[in-house]
Length: 61
Image 1: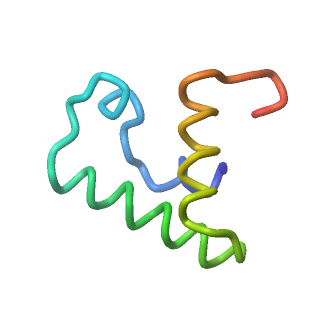
Image 2 (image 1 turned 90 degrees about the vertical axis):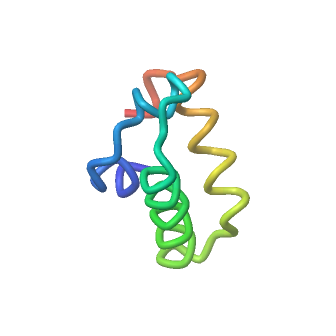
């Protein structure tokens, strides 16, 4: 998931529900690109990203 955080997208904005349409589109594009690059489904990548953002653990880095 570190690949997604390297996009410069503000996860604080996402958590605060303060995303612009452009930022939301960039988030979805980053998720899709990561899923394609790693051979995962976009749904699974997005689900794991949400879990990490909402309930981080030490193992999440």
